Length: 466
Image (cartoon, rainbow, N blue to C red):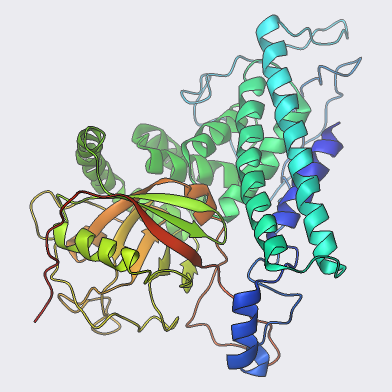
C-alpha cells in the first residue's frame, strides 16, 4: 500500500509538472521570434519543466501499518548527508502537531482504530480516490493530444482546468493524511506527506499546512533537512515566530541555507511588522476592499487591494486591469524563495506604460511585504539595488517569503488571498541567465486574463510623475 500511494503521488506530480503539453499561443510566438537555441518545439511547452522528483530522504519510522497483520519490523536508519543530527527540537511535545505518541502492541496484533480514526481514514481514502480520478482525466486528455486525436484549443483548456483541479485535490489528500496521522500510525500517509512536503519545499510553498505537517513528521522522528527548513520558513510566513526561533536555535550553522540565514537575521523585524499587519488584516476583513481575479496558466488567484494605504497605485492597477493590459503577459522572472514578476509587455524587464506613479511607500500606514504580498516594481538606479524614485508603472512582484526591506523603497498595494498554491508552481525563469547553444528554452507561465471582481463606485485619480 505504501508503494501505491507513493507512485500515485509521483505520477500526479510528473503529469502536472513534467509532461509535454503545448501552449499554442506562446509556442507559436517563440517559434517565430526566438533564435534556434530558444525555439520551443510543439512537444515542449509552457506546461513543461524538468521535474525534481520528490524522493523522501529518510527511512520509514518504526510504526505499524494498521492494515498489516503484524507490526512493521524495525528498519535501520542509514547515515544521511541531508539529515539533521540530534533529537527533536520540540522536546517531548510538539506545539504544532499535537500528535499522540504511537503505541505498538507488543503481542503483534494489528493496531486498533477507534471510531474517530476510522472516520479520518475514510476521509483520507475518499480524497485519494478523487485524486486517482482527477489524474486519470488529465492523463486521458494529454494522451489524446499527444496522439493527435484532439489537439484543439479546447482540449488544451480542458487540460489546464483539469490540472488546476488536481492541484487542489493534492492539497485535500495532504490535509486528510495529516488529520488521519494525528490519530493513528500508518506508513501510507507518512509517505504521502514526505513526498508532498519535499515537492512544496522545492516550489517555495510555505503555507500553514506545510508548517504543521513538517512539524508532525519531525515529531515522529524524521530528520531530513528539508523538513526543518520547511517548518521554520512556513512558521515565519504564518506568524508562528516562537516555533521558528526554536528550530533555528536548534540547527547548526552548517544546516542553514541562504534563505534561512536571511530569515533568522530578519526574524525580529518581520515579527514586529507582522503584529501591525495582523491588526490591519482584521480591519480589512470588515471592509469591501477591491479585488482582482487573475486567471493564470497554473490556476486562478484572487488579489485584494489596499485602497486606503495606496490609493493612487490601486486606482492605476484597476485601470490597467479593466483595459486588459495584463491579459496574456508572462511571469517573465520567477525566483525560488523570493518572487514572481509580471506586468511587462516586452517580457524583458524593461517595459512600462509610459506613465510613472508617485511613490506611496512613505504614506502613514503603508503596508509591508509578506508571503503573497504585491509590490510595484521600480526602475533600478544601478547594481547597488537602489531604485529610481517615482518610477513604478505596470510591473509588479508577488512575494513567496517576507521581505521587510521592500516597504522602505517600494509600494506594497495588495496581497493574494486565494490561489497562492498555484503561484508556487510557476515555471522558474531567469531572463538574465545566459542561454547555451542548443539549449531548449521553455515559455514562461503567464496571466491569461485579469478582471476586477469587486470595486468601489468611485476611485481616486492616479497621481503620476510629471
